Length: 533
Image (tube, rainbow, N blue to C red; front, top):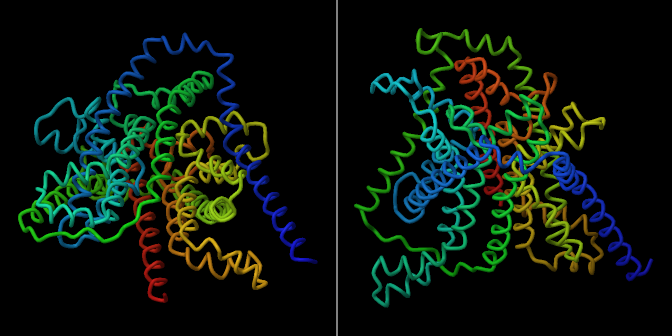
């Protein structure tokens, strides 16, 4: 076979694979969303939107989401500055502890607040507060706890890789700290900050875990959607709410795409130089310690709650709640969660790597279409994706099986790991395949022997991301799971509904421990790989 024939065959195989992947994305994301939106044709949308309950929930969702976003992004900005731009001690430990809230479901944060500041919370009783934290401030507080670690990591990553050369030039010119901030730092942060704000806002406005736990009578759209679909099986009304929840997520996705493409062109000439300033460092250290204490206060509270007899009546040590949770199937549901998380970690990562290779290393017009399909899930909240799967897959063989949970979790969390691989592959020498072809080395050998070894750290992070999020998600799977394949995280909502907070606390603690172990395993694996290199 001639070289030209071999090249034509390779192009044909690549084209066939890309078409196959596009068909998969049509089936897994696009068509379910179209099916969900099509159900609105039989719904009086004007009546739904004009209803007093809906308008109140929409208004309250916007108010609480905007308030929590401002606080969350501001706190994340302060913390990212404290870690990235000062000489505080134990930066790695601080960085790790500040991201612990990402390892438990949002509903667990709400539960922690109930234990501390609920009607019978230990701090409420200590301070003589009768009403508790339910309502607006409860949702805002829980949403900040749930969302700020994501905003912090995004801003910290931006600050850590900022080029220090302009600051050195500003120093020579005699610019003050204030002038440097407005002339250099603020313009540099403007575009990433827009993405951070919309990403944080989207997380908060589409979450129903915190409002379900501490919202009280303060209704939000996700809670309304959850109650209408789960409680009243009103899929049409759920679709209308789902369409509205798609809007902020879609805006966030578009902004992220626009800023990401321009941001990747930046070049770090020299790391930012941190000057000695003991007063500043002490203030930053104090800020980090204070936030970490506030983070672990609710986590420590529900950790204690899992081992007491009956809160707040009988606070004696007991393992009765653990036994009760186990009797109600906690071990079986934990096994389901581990199976789902492990399967999605391997299969989702494999799919993300394949997708990223076809879009980043084999660029054609179809590659761009595939790239857009691959990041579609960024704009789809878990509740909306779960509802669309109910409608689209209801009459298929996978509906009601654990396979549909594999699929929905893979799609729900796909975009971020895919972008990790896409960015990593894009930074590796683009001529590798051409050189390999000239030397008679096949493409898959280049992938196996060169690309994958250079991307091992990224692949491990992708697997960890899939695993951790699958362990704690309740949104995408809440409409799809049944008693046979139910993940452990859904037991939290079950126990919460039965007012068994002690059992719910134990389940939250188990999820936290599993996720911490997973993150530590990824850390050790990456450390071992770096030693070999």
